[in-house]
Image (cartoon, rainbow, N blue to C red; front, side, top):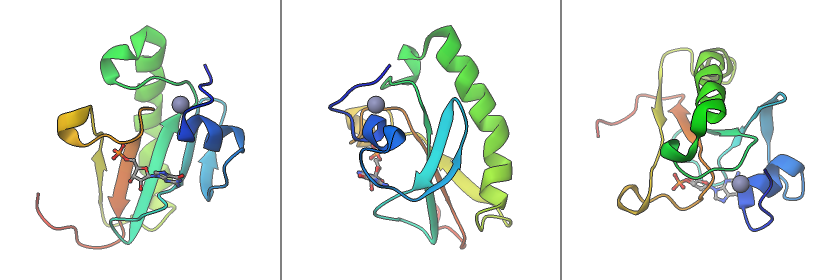
Length: 113
Ligand code: 5GP
Ligand code: ZN
């Protein structure tokens, strides 16, 4: 599903430029435009949904496969010594882009949170 109002759908389609570090038929990984760590990537399913509870069965399977690929992608992009995954869900978490995404943060010793 493509939502023309969604920044990440438009990045996936190539309508908005991004620095992509990985792509396959169901996911895309690109650099965050405002990095909060030395390495800050966003792993995004190609199908548009906002929240985990909206993923459905097929979305959940995609997320499971994303989680399996992320360690390899992270290691190949400067996170050999560890990294942090974050999924902001909804208003209280400060989600600003309403297309589910997994933040991959690393490349340095991260502060506690
Ligand atoms: P959220 O706060 O929704 O979890 O994270 C959204 C993230 O998307 C933020 O870290 C923000 O910097 C990033 N972002 C917003 N717009 C763009 C964009 O146009 N390109 C890229 N590469 N990242 C973006
Ligand atoms: Zn989208």
